[in-house]
Image 1 (cartoon, rainbow, N blue to C red):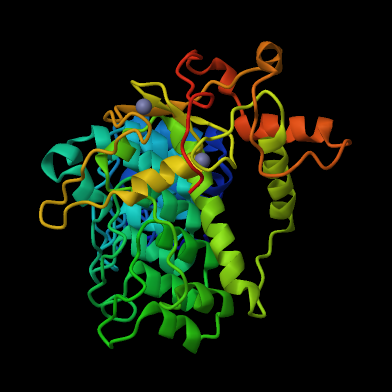
Image 2 (cartoon, rainbow, N blue to C red; image 1 turned 30 degrees about the horizontal axis):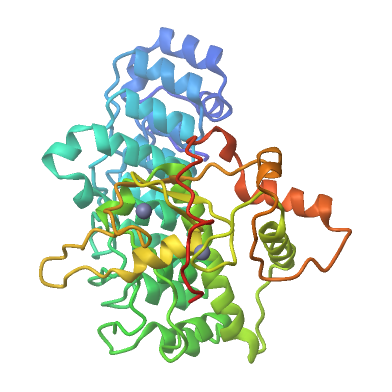
Length: 443
Ligand SMILES: [Zn+2]
Ligand SMILES: [Zn+2]
């Protein structure tokens, strides 16, 4: 950033700005002692204050030294951008957090596109900054004055929400965080990009498969049209993004959709939620495989096939209860308060199955498929160890496959442990298991 200085008003020199950019705190401090006024002077063209330059370059020490001198954190440059916006734009998370602590306002709009710091973090794909801003938004006065949900969906001067920008730029991590925090998946833009575009249109245009996948799993509508009457499929087709075309084709099978708007799910225990998310992605990957089978596109993840093998092994490993709805996967999710267990796939199918009443958006509370009691919470199931299982070795165990390999012992245990992760420390209910007494038929 070679900034010309507003000469006449300023006795800052090029050396000083160099020091700012390289974070030479001593030099900056001695310059500040000589002339405290430089804190209030700007560069000639961008009208950047020292605080902007420190934030954009991630110079935390210098930034802190300036803030300690009671400089207001929301100084504006030529485009009415705050130092917080520049930190979000350049992904300088430490400076961003320092500015937030100093009381920087997250609800400022620049004059360039009418964007906030949240737009900038999403556009440039800095998911850590995005997350930090959202945390601040939950606690700050913004939550009271504007409402958190409104802030997540804040529009820029052209009607683009942060979600639109993340989709347009192909930022799946930011997309996920925004959706998880209540971003509206089917919002359409005003004038931004092509009018009336949804995030799915924008991801389709760029051919961002991960974003398309994420948006579909959050319930994006493949048939929603933009202002010119195009569906995302048409947009991807025109730009020859083959894999996206296949997934966006309205005649290909429906993806499994994460029931995110449901209060029930948003209150999920984080470990159980992670398991369910993985199950959802699994199910959708299977579907993608089938969709892409006949096309020239295949999924670019050879790692995944190893994982598949591990999953298969996991269900054969001894010491684990098979889900007695599908007889296919291991019970990883436990229903509270009844204690019945099932696998993540079946839990998800159960939650996705109950659709909200379109008039009230009220959802019938999901019930346990075994005892019909209301599901108060889902937690990660505690799984039995092999030691415990010795006592029960006479009990019949159902398995999808016969034990067809004698050499898979150690690898299946490895797969098993990765599949069930850190279950040992979770709840300790052992007696609620229904596998032995369950008479349900295979679906
Ligand atoms: Zn199951
Ligand atoms: Zn139950």
